[in-house]
Image (tube, rainbow, N blue to C red; front, top):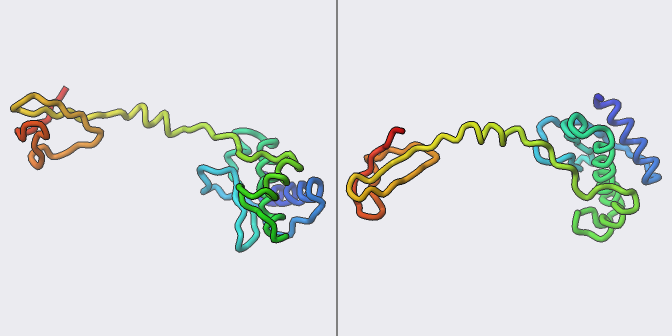
Length: 155
C-alpha cells in the first residue's frame, strides 16, 4: 500500500464511520517507532506507521486510522480530542476504534540478549567482586568496601 491508497482508505473510513470528510493528508511515516500513528495538531495531517500494516495486517491499520480520525474530527470541532477526554472516549466507542494498538514484536530484544557481555573486577585486598555492563579503567577507582585497589578479572 502506498500513500495514495492510504489517503483513499482514510477518506473512505472518515465518510463511512464519521459521516464527515477528511480534507487533509494521510501518509506513512517510517520513522515512527513506538506508535501506530499520530495526528498533527498544526497541519491536521495523520501519519501512520507502515510496520503495523506489515506485521498485523489491514484490520489493525484500519483501527489505527479510526483512532487518529477521532483525534482529527474532535480537534476540528473544538471538543476534547485528548486520550483522557470524555468526548474522545465516547467517539472511540461509537466507531469501535481501539484505544491502544497491538504492540509490535521487538527485534532489539534478541540483539540485547545475544550481546550480554559483562566485565568482572575484583578488589586485591578484600576480594570484593564487581560485575559491570560497561568497561572501566580500574586504576581510577578504589574498592567501596576497604578502599583497596581493583583489577580486572579475565574469565
